[in-house]
Length: 256
Image (cartoon, one colour):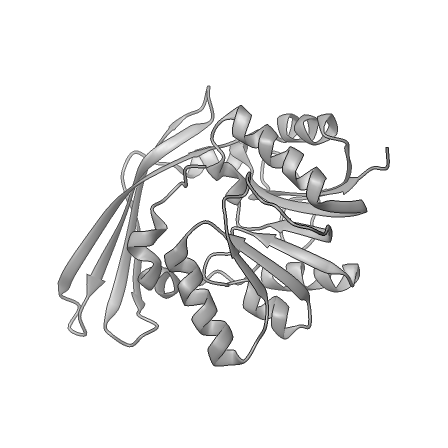
């Protein structure tokens, strides 16, 4: 599976500019409702994993990036937390046991750009879930996400580095093809010193594929999932096509 971004080059900067926390209460609540084994896919540096572990969740974490997982493992050591951490692509997972809940957070499904990859992934989820197990997948709402893509780069500002070595600045320039759902462009990350002078620049290509809710639901149904709920945001508000920023789909593996 090809990633939407080359995380190996920016893993040491990722936690400095990615500070999103709005989804944490949602995932903690959903995991605590399950009270069983949880598999988190594309876990990265553990932005969600660490709070889940601190909340007592029995968690297995998977990511394809060695650099991101190295940072995650360091956090686990520093915080004296334990989790099973596996380096693997999400379509090639192999486990001897199944899970009660599988999470794919932070709209990471869009990194699966082809229909073949998407179907392989959903088939793998069905294989890894216990009977009546749940799969929660967060997606962009194409109706809203496409409107946010402008003709010029979006500058997200400067952020203090978590290692204290200056600042990080993030700029993103994207182009969309609404007829195909493909989005491509560049993410530029600048390393700045304490005086905010540029000392390094990382310009990385980005590509991901949006999917409509109907198409995603059909993909789930073809693999034997029943749709439980669809939320439009992490506050459990209902999905509204015209305005909701996300499509948060909770599905259940049906018995044969």
